[in-house]
Length: 79
Image: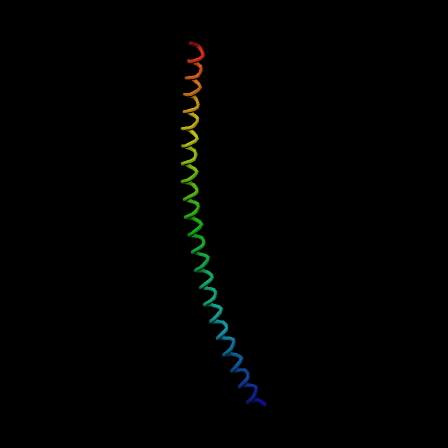
């Protein structure tokens, strides 16, 4: 009975160690995926910030053009 217990214990220990290694590899893979996702998110944020800046510049130009058109219209109405 003692020999059989030792054999079963050895096999169980081997399985546990093998599972632990797989779990470590899985953890490393998940960590790598998470780091890549974070890098992608930072890149997307940078692109979004750039787009926001361009949109704000376009809005300022549009407002300036609108003001010029309004001034021109008022001048034409005074004539």
